[in-house]
Length: 212
Ligand code: CDP
Image (cartoon, rainbow, N blue to C red; front, top):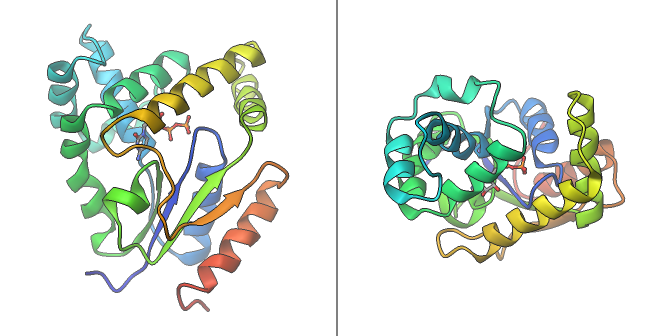
């Protein structure tokens, strides 16, 4: 049991979890882990080896051989990496292999972690849990802008459809499906900018932990 707080931020794709979690971590003086990167790095390793991300043997071998430097790779985003991450994430052996890394990350100094199952599976005793969401159209618009900002042209309808399918897979899988913990604070950011979401999240967290 750590004395430093653990803040769990879960929710569907492009809901603003990463931006929010990073800002909260900096405000609270806590380390930050984007757990999506773990699944993305496993998917990428499988693709590099010419394997199939939905094959349990391929994906589990990749998960077991993951090293922290994999999270710094620059090719973990984009449609192919998205699909590979979602495929490996449905495999129970992959999730089991990544569990200790996530728990160890937070055990000493506390942490803000964002993902799909932080408040439900990884840290069910987290001091504060948020489930961050937004409408599909708004999330697709944000991801489309993000891609464009990186010089990647994409049809907004294609981005929306890919995201809809990925969310559906994340929510339907048997292993640690995407869902809000019963004690999570629901934050719908459809009509909020990043500042408003940050302030709303902070106000909730103040009700759960002592802050300066
Ligand atoms: O950035 P985006 O929200 O699109 O995705 P991400 O958070 O980087 O996660 C990529 C994929 O990894 C998700 O679609 C999930 O399938 C999976 N994931 C998961 O299963 N559990 C987590 N804690 C984090 C990500």
